[in-house]
Length: 107
Image (tube, rainbow, N blue to C red; front, side):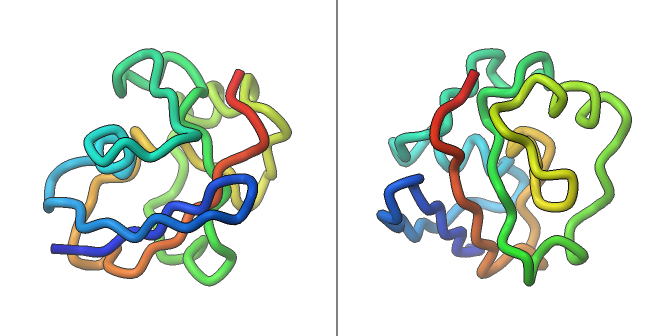
């Protein structure tokens, strides 16, 4: 099972095993990781699962699609290069070791 590292805004790290096929957001939700609210439940209809992807991982992820890009406009302090919505990141073996950091708040 791929290990994903979720880093809270205060620096607290949570390393969890996330089953293949779930999203990075579902991995956070199912493991009680604070900082990812996921108000829309993964429908890409809000920005409350916004994270900053570790720079080493940015190019390894699938590209941002137009719907995710639109929702990122509503995120708190989005970074044009590192911001992603975790509901749009399906967990595969290729994501083993992924690190994401939560913003100061979700809006």
